[in-house]
Structures are given as structure tokens and as C-alpha cells.
Amino acid sequence: MRIMMTALALSLVAPAFAQTAVPVVTAPAMPDAARIAAAKPVIDRLWPLGTYRRLMDGTMSKMMDQMMSSMFDMKAADMVGGFDKSGQAAKELGDRSMGEVAAGKDPHFRERMKITIDVMMGEMIPLMEKMEPAIRESLTGVYAGKFDVRQLGEMNTFFATPTGAAYADQAMLMMMDPEVMKSIQGFAPELMRAMPGIMTKMEAATKHLPPPPKEKPSQD
Image (tube, rainbow, N blue to C red):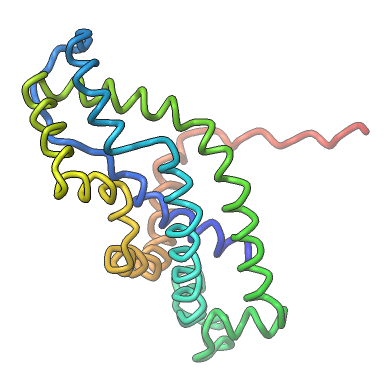
């Protein structure tokens, strides 16, 4: 159960990183040097080095805590309902929440989950920081490809104003705002209810394929 809930929480975090989308503008496939030069200060404003740490060191940790708390409060029967064709498991679970069921098996479940997530986040931060220069370079190319020199210059002029600087400072963090995350958290029960149907469709779509080969037992 711990692995399942951690995986579910991480699946809900993913939309928060889909925040670098920009309007589609006709642009050459290979941005020229002038566009690249104009895009660099824009990315310096929007994604300075250390952005991943800001995302994950405080905001992400709080969001994960809230998300896990929300899942603990969900009715366990709702989580297994789609997989429980006979209804017996849901009946046995009754009105107990996921947290109550988990605590019945492991009284330290909540603390164990929190420590697990905190350690995971702590380990992910340096890994993500290693990726950050490449992310910044990719974003520079994306902005240079989608916006021309004039548009990029106007962005940079705006970001140089107090209002623009305040916006740029928060632009990549706003998808992690508690108000936004409430909407994302509401997706969890819908996902669990839909999962049996999704799995059935996946099985139907792949039934023409031979079964995957079985792993051979280790000779060690």
C-alpha cells in the first residue's frame, strides 16, 4: 500500500512540471544566434539556477504532505471499488479511510510515509540540480524558436520592471500553489475509479500480442 500511494502521489505531481509551455508562434526550426542571445536573459529571469531547489525543497514537500493527507482521508472502499468485482473487499473495508486501514496494519504508517517522502525529496534535489543547466539551455532554445528577437526583447523589458521581476520570480512556482494543487488532488479518486476501465482497455488493445516472456530464474 505504501508503494502504491507513493506512486500515485508522484503521478499527481507530474502536471506541476508541465508549466514551461508557451504560445505557439511560427519560427524557424533552428533558431539563429540573435534569437538565442535574446532568449538567454529571459530564461535567466524565468528559470535562474536554483529553481529546482526552490520547487522541491519547500513547496514540493508541503504539496506532497497535503496530497498524502488527502489520500489518507479517502474511503478505502472507493480506492478498491473498481477492482473489487464481487464487492466483498469493499464491504469488509466499510467506511474506514485509507489512513485507518493503513494504521491498522502499521501504527507508524503516516510517520513512515512522511520520512520516506522527505528522504526521496532530499535525494532528488541534487539530481535535479545536475539537470538544471541542460533544462535552461533547452528552454532557451524553445523560447528562441517560438518568439522572435522583438518579442523576446519586450519580455526582457517587462521582466526588468518591478512587476515583471515579481512575476518572473514566481512564474515557475505558481503551479505549486495550494489553490492549484487542490484541483490536482481532486484527480486522485477519479483516477482510482477509472483505473480498472483503463486497465481493461489496455488489455484489449494488447491482446493480439503474445504474452511477455517470463523471467528466467537467476542461476546465482
